[in-house]
Structure formats: C-alpha cells, structure tokens
Image 1 (tube, rainbow, N blue to C red):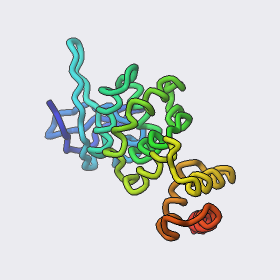
Image 2 (image 1 turned 30 degrees about the horizontal axis):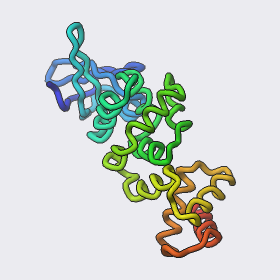
Image 3 (image 1 turned 90 degrees about the vertical axis):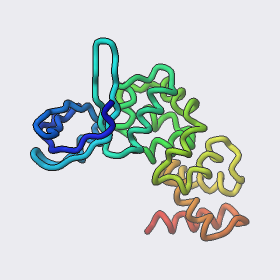
Image 4 (image 1 turned 60 degrees about the horizontal axis):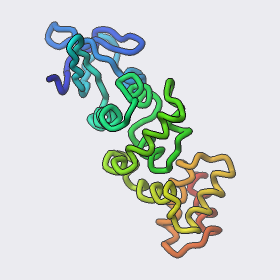
Amino acid sequence: MIGKLKGVVDETGEDHCVVDVHGVGYVVFCPLRTLSTLPGTGEAVELFIETYVREDLIRLYGFGSALEREWFRLLMNNVQGVGAKVALAVLSTLSPADLANAIALRDVAMVSRAPGVGKKVAERIVTELKDKAPAYAGAATGTIGLKQELGDGVAPAPVADAVSALANLGYSRDVAANAIAAALKAAGEGADSAKLIRLGLKELAR
C-alpha cells in the first residue's frame, strides 16, 4: 500500500495529477481544493495517499494533508451511499474544518453544496458522522463543542439567540457561531444575548 508520495509534479489534469517519483509517474486523483494548491510542473510536491484496490482496479487518491485523507476515509467507510466520487466532491467543496463545522451545526445545505451530493446524502453525512466530527475538526477544534450544542438544540438560550440574530443579519451560521464563541470568551459564561450580539458584531467588524 502507498501512504505518501514525494516527488515532482509531472502533469496536472481536471481531476488528477501525475507525480514523478524517481522516474516513475503515479496518477493520483485529488479533490479540486488539493489540485488548486499544487505547485507548477517540475516542482516538488508531497501528497498523502489513500490506495484503493479492487479486483479490476488500483487507484491512488491524493490529499494535501493527513487530515483531508482521514476525512476521505471517514466519508467512504462510514456513510452509506458515499463512494470515492462523492467523497472527493465533498472535499473539493469544503475544507476539513468547514466540513466538521457543517456536521456539528447540522448544516445539510452546506454539505449539499458539493456537486452530486443531494439532500438525502448530505443528511446521511451529517447524521452518521455527528459523533466523529470533533476528533477531525482541525482548525475548527476550538469552537466545535459550541457548534454541536447549537446543532443539537441544547446551547444556552443567550448563545442560541445571539447566533440566530447574526444569522438573520445575513451571516452564515458557521461565521455567526465563530463570532459568538469569541464573544462568549470575552464576556464570560453569564453574558446575555444583547451583550453577545454586540461583542459578536465587533468581532465580525475586525
């Protein structure tokens, strides 16, 4: 099994790249987010690889980070109806942190933004990965607990009201939750919704 490739970019296509490792060219299928960050032809590259083996097929999937690869595995192995194509589409659209946030907030609409991911599949992703998302939140780790409370409908009323107020102003629930999480840190646990909204707006104005 191949776990990582370190070489130079030989070619980049719409959904794949070719990595030259000591004269051997490996075709690696990648999310669009990964492809967009690749260096130019002839430049050094390192990709984390998931090797997919079937009776009639061996395919390499490549990611810019180990965390992205873990999400690919989570999607493929834990969500019914999600194969490599759908998993790549999700990771082409959402970063690991965005995906963890969307799952925590039960934001089916955000997950279904990925091409080919309908509402039913998005709902399965959100439901079936609910308990696993916090461990793979990456940059979102600091606010994932609050977002899970919001998604479960058990967040303190002032917090839930403040997030709703910012969302009503046009901010996404994710952005609103991040702002209120920062406001909560500054104001303390007993702050009312008016104070949290005020501090949240200050945070968003930075």
